Length: 634
Ligand SMILES: NC(=O)c1ccc[n+]([C@@H]2O[C@H](COP(=O)([O-])OP(=O)(O)OC[C@H]3O[C@@H](n4cnc5c(N)ncnc54)[C@H](OP(=O)(O)O)[C@@H]3O)[C@@H](O)[C@H]2O)c1
Image (tube, rainbow, N blue to C red; front, side):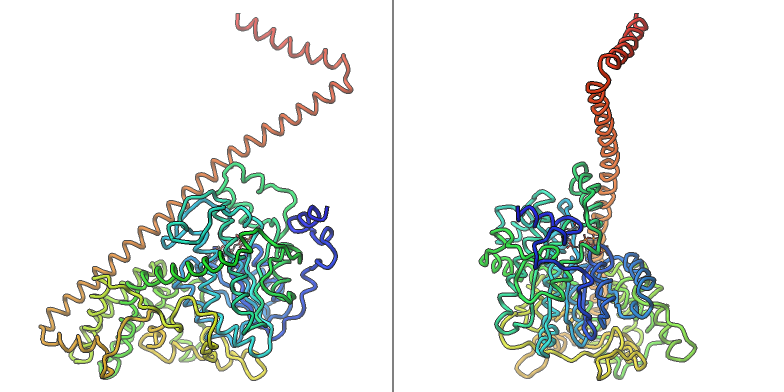
């Protein structure tokens, strides 16, 4: 009986009425969060929005929200403004981030770590629902988004969270799981990429990624417990919630059967769905648990409690992320090197005109962050600073619609022509172009790209060992804090404004893609030595070769990306067609079912109440019809 009550409480709306005593929780019971900082992935819609709204209404000081689509973020922003006021909306920083793009996720996390002074709550909520199999970055997309993306994000934010916990604060990490984890395939071993990419049913694929969420929760909790007992990590199940996952994604996974879920009458709304996550994010006192709505601690499946399986999952995660990020960084490395080059040639070189510098700036921003729309408003104001900021915004905006890869390609070609024109006379510049050639040579010959990453550059940071170096925040994305911890936007100074040539300080470029430049015994970069060896070659000839090689290489990368993108578009067209066909079939099935039901009811009524008279009348009616038809046929 208790199990039935718990299942009803966990999965259906108004769970508190069924939950055993001591496991009740509501959003109004969330304590004030003044002075705290939080991050919610997928916080602009569904359950994530329920969390965003609650955190803001409980006075969270700053909130980072990550999602892919600017229109959902805009919609959420408008709703927050309307319901909670402008002041609440100003406390939110919406950042575009595709969790299936791990390089981007790592960059976003690093930016946040630099910007925020602390991080008290991390809600890893975003997710791909019960959908058919697709790959992202050569990895099953459920795992790539729901698990890998969140591991990359969390790992890069851990130093900041550890720093926060060292200040005697409780830090809480919440991983969105689901009771569908019980439907993960029974042969899951987490042994290889090949195993990750095996074909399974949509339910199994989704269930496996949710099993990973629980295993990761327990793994993190196990590894942090001793040194960081104030960092609590828990997984949650929200129940069956009326969100895009349960009325749209499910139809991709199950075009017909999914309708049962779409029209399920008992679903929770997004706020009811946020209850268990908010409990884990603000109230839970223990770590490593699987908390079902409202606040019921459940054991979960046997697999979810298998420590060895959890360790294997995380080893595989580390290996796959290193391998994949290393590979994608090969092409990226050249871009990164180009950024470094730009910064170095400033000294002693003739300064290119403002238009060229702005064009490079626009391409740089486009390649790093995509379209400006949805990221920042066009600056207003009449002072010199605003005018310059507006020029930069316009330069960025003029590249709208350009894919990141294409923007990188154009950045490199523009850079080369700029260097040729304005800096070619400088021996330094020639040397630096040769360095670009060196990097290109590495990419071309496919030298293993990632030497064992150092802890600082590892996509998955070590969880044990000495406390990681934590660099105090250098506000870059938003305002500074004063001594009381409040934000002070008055003295806001964008890092970009310091660097008028291009906003990529050396350190940033190095972080983006640590290039394999090693130093010899004399401390000089190996690449410079190579440059010196090559400096006898005819300048013009090798410069042309470098140009051609770079253009060819970047074009290849661009073509590959475009292929992948069109595959994704095709996928979404297929999804729409399948959804439409499913919709039509669903409607037909519903009509037939309703008609049958009405007929059955009528027949039952006839049998019970109508007696012989109605039956006779019906028979006569049908008989007449049949008789008329037969006569007609004759
Ligand atoms: N709904 C349920 O019944 C249910 C049940 C059990 C567990 N859950 C779990 O609860 C969590 C929230 O789900 P929900 O029902 O609220 O779903 P939802 O309404 O579809 O919201 C999912 C959010 O995730 C974001 N997202 C998806 N893919 C992303 C990616 N690659 N990168 C960044 N963000 C991405 C979406 O942002 P964009 O729109 O911008 O892509 C969206 O904001 C999920 O982890 C889900 O698996 C839900």
